[in-house]
Amino acid sequence: MPNIEIHGLGIRGPFAQEAFALRKKIFEILEASPVAKDIVVSIYDDIVVDKKGEAQPYLRIIFAPADRIFLDILSLRSLGFDIEVLELKNFQSRNSQSLVSEADLDPEFLRG
Image (cartoon, rainbow, N blue to C red):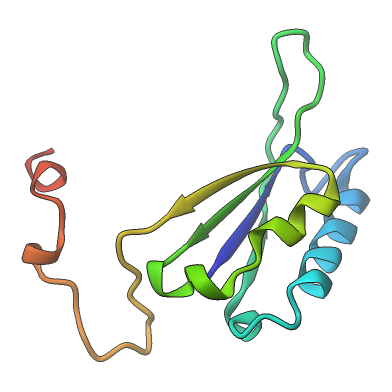
């Protein structure tokens, strides 16, 4: 389930309409993707500013390794936002029959 997060526009305030319009554009751009039905877009109600106090909204794309080849990340550059890309080590769907074992996890993470 690829998750595209919108940061810095919020769900309230002066940029809220832009955030909801951006969400719609993201779905439109990625509608031909083989994983389109699994994509979710999250709008975070946060403020992102640089050292000068100027707004710096950005997109964060989080996806499982299996989705990498299907997700056309470069197509989102046309939206004019900085883009962070994070690849998950694993993703477990609520419908999945398999569970992640401790052997699948990073030992450093387990140590805390």
